[in-house]
Image (tube, rainbow, N blue to C red; front, side, top):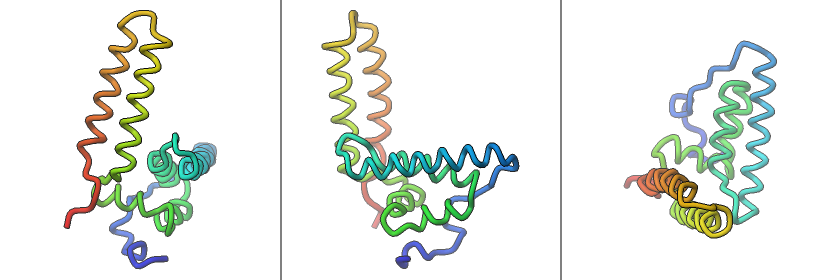
Length: 143
């Protein structure tokens, strides 16, 4: 474990495991699915990584303290989670990729799917809000 990951439990996101075993196992399965998607996102340029890991961390926080702590402290996967938890950071390459992919999706829908202007307008407004949020996040930790 690197020094950054060895901090106290106070700096980690809080965990409250669900009481119902069925819900716990469902959330654990959902968490592992998102870990898999996050790892696929590391290998495939068109898939995001961090959002899937954030979803996995949330699911593990409700289902397994052990898996939650493993993912949060992981030397490779945990860094982006710790950066997000501490500073709400979205790395600059991730911001660029997200905006490019949203723009490409909007262009595709406008040119090849939509039969009128309402679908591209609604999609454009929704993606615009998401893009504004992504671009408003810092891309590195404060000095």
